[in-house]
Length: 88
Image (cartoon, rainbow, N blue to C red; front, side):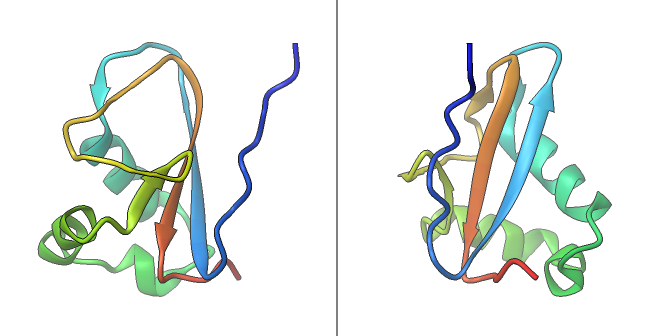
């Protein structure tokens, strides 16, 4: 079985979450992944307030659809796109 990788929207930064169990909230997992990455230092230094605003304005997407902070993440790989931040 091959993984389907959705197309990355233009002017976005992609975070790949690889979970061994399901049920964890997207906001906690994503913030930890953002703080751990070294590709986009501007995004890595994001404040919690600005991070929450990204959800409110629909700039965090999974499979091209608006994500909510309380979205639970399934086991396996999830591709999360953050609009407005370029991949370097």
